[in-house]
Length: 138
Image 1 (tube, rainbow, N blue to C red):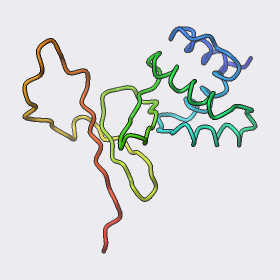
Image 2 (image 1 turned 180 degrees about the vertical axis):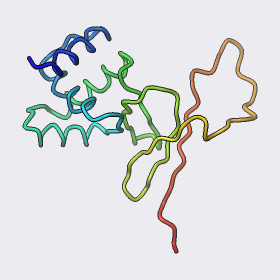
Image 3 (image 1 turned 120 degrees about the horizontal axis):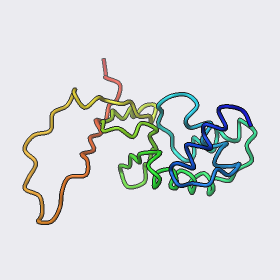
């Protein structure tokens, strides 16, 4: 096992996950190139291109396990569009409609004001903002 695999295995163990071969392979793709946004389908395609024999169902399960363990953040919108973000810090997103991709927006760049009173017994976990962009007509 190389150094990167050992580090990924330890990261999974610390998150309470057993470092199986498939989890390690998918983690290497996810966390090997800095912060990124992936869908289950795009990660599945990357895995197949890397000659990793894994089903789409396994990719979905692994992404959801990583999310539950705090290794990924889910960015869902339009009911059926879901991305997984390796940057789990508090931040916002641009959604680029033409390329169907997400780009991070820092929290210092947006100010949220005027939220209505919260229902009793609740607190804000986080605020998700997605700004949808398309190419201008000009």
